Length: 173
Image (tube, rainbow, N blue to C red; front, side, top):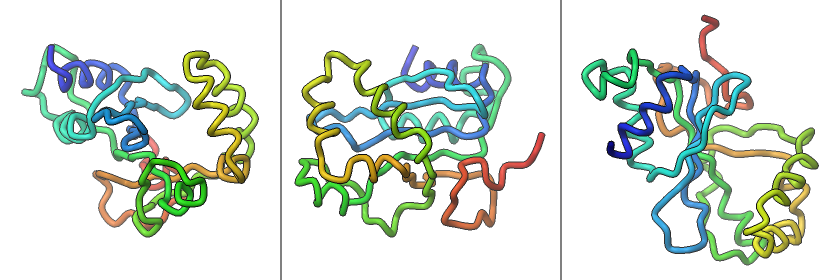
């Protein structure tokens, strides 16, 4: 089973309203990102994919002829890529590039989850060195109060940007 088929087999059973990916944040020269498949209150799965696979799976998710054995077609309304503004990395002197702030389309207030995020970092024992470097950056707690995304694809025409809610514009049922 190819990556696109595997990803689709994860998407269809959960019928997520949107998909959020993490791309471009790996310091090592790896062409991979992590895809988090999210429904309203469920983080269903994480799966490592390239951005191209995520875009392709999003585009084809409603196509009943594309891997029909993986369940009925389902089309999430939006595809986001988690991104960080270049200015953040520049201020941290980090070997990561980020995106120009003008490309960011969603700014999500996560201030109530900062301590939970920090506790979650400590669950990744194999990444302890990286965790300490990240948490030790000046201004990390302030940075962690907001998550930023680029809307890579949408099936909702005329969506006003920027957004402060990833569910904005998605119809109720």
